Length: 310
Image (cartoon, rainbow, N blue to C red; front, side):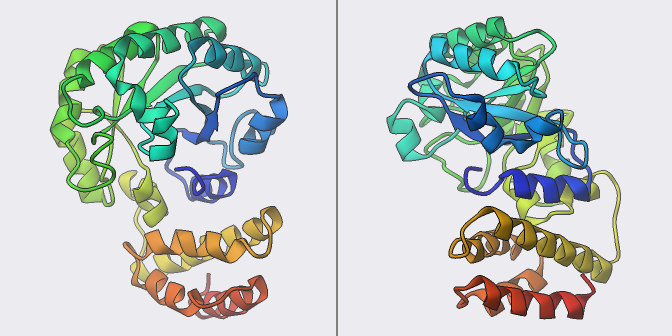
């Protein structure tokens, strides 16, 4: 989730609890071996044993199409001992796909195999290499072939987003197609796509047969979803106070990271998704929507936090 799930949001969400591991936004590998500063910029967690403050492991995600260049960058970042290296074959963004990145590679299982095999060979075995894919470009005819190519190349786990590139993020997700991939592979397959609630989590596991589920936009829309899945529930009033405190924490960190002109947009971006889960987030977004400066946002947010006990 480029531009959204950065180190700040990873920190806030993982401190809420419930996550086994997480991934960075993708590092685009297209022309050269990147300096270590490029990796620590996108994942400051590398300076903390590749973990968030809550102790959640963070895997570095690569996006590219050149097997040798991806392998060289993987070998380079391996010196920083990341918690894992994840390969992105799922991004549907047109700009990325026009440059042979993300889901655009799902018409070429042989290339997928070459990428994984070379990255795996370049990285010490204690560092897991994983991948995420969609079901295809416009149809699912090569989904199992692509998944098998990735598994045979040496990935440890495969996350499958249950849509094609052309599906974008339109519901419904094709969970049954993930079941076909899981049945074909011997490595763990992790289901992903259209999981917004505890009921969705139970449903996707039931349809796919997968033991594990990756949360994406659903985790952003409901910051307590992972804990809910773990069986931890709070009183609805106390729940929003908890989430409001997370919003305040996020706002403080964002102001220290981006330009003042950019910080209001970052907060609104999160609230837009959160409106799906919390009516209080909708009310807060409405109060902040017209505001353009950080001090104005701070004043409104402080009043809201004081009223909710967040």
